Length: 515
Image (cartoon, rainbow, N blue to C red):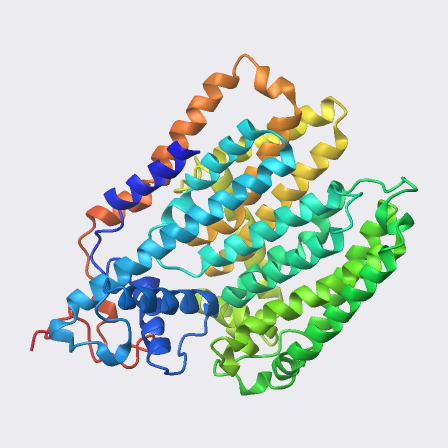
């Protein structure tokens, strides 16, 4: 584990930290600019993802470094003119890259602890963390400033907590774990609403991980403290829901005031599909409880904990409040469809968002995902493709050995990853999106490796393992190395008062900035 994290740090400084501040213009400068606005007590201007937590974290980080005398410029008001601002931008962007490295390390460490708890094998957990850290998306996001990093960390940890809770039938705190998962998933939504599709896959992913609650002495069946604990959870849910209700009401009733030119995604009405998503989760929890014979009181307490977790997650929007953030988080499909039209203008010409054009685009995207999965038909900087091959082989072996539950668990994780990647093709399936689904492939591989001894003792196991390790190290660094040696300057962003940095006249790399 120490070798993995040390290698990540060395890789960061060899290829990433010393890049020019404008090398990754999208989104390094956008996020730093928003942090400057926040520290100058100016309203947020970027709402695409909406990036709420990334902007908050950067603002606080800049404040801390400025107070320690390690960062000269931490607010927009202190930023010098373009001709002499290069050093200020460089310091701020590098500080942001260091923060990304710290968040990535914390993400990987938490992933290691939870994966070890899930598979009960430190060796497999350590291999899983290596596969995650040296996956294409993770190694890329650990050195730049993008909203996917925090969103992926929140949603992945939420899923692992949920998988652990699914098999913890004798603990009194299972509803609390489910509530924690709901809170983390909501925080992920507050940073990048695209993760709504992963979150909606949770009920299907978690279902095969349950255990029957047949014991008559289980806490939620036999303990005299069960009902009082349930009452406490219900009260917490009611208080949290009451505090978050203004946000929910604003998001569902004021969508037509959005800054972005939205169209209602379903039924021609804003707020029409959100109750359907809520119903989906209710049915998912009822289905899980029925399949695994969960006590009724525990099921109700878990539902209340989900409400509390979602409400607490939404309350984070008050930390740097702007109504557009609320609208984006509560109306994710409208926002995502709006940005999908940037990649495929034909979608905007359809009479309704849900159209034949959308279905055709998704089918084409699915074909593209399958082509990427071969690596030969469509290469990419994503070494977890090869790990996915191992998962497919492991699922086949598990079925042959009668491990149907294990095969179903791995298949559910892989199906969610493929489905999310297919939807992401509407935005081009960028390298940054890999960090959202690579953890699912790693978890599936860890489950198979920890359970199927035939995989570990196979005569090809060592050779395949060495090849996978080498592929992860080499392929994951193709993007960082490419950016290290590229010389192109982003002159396309030299429009005065560029729409993502409206208060900046021009940047130092733009022609005429010195004058």
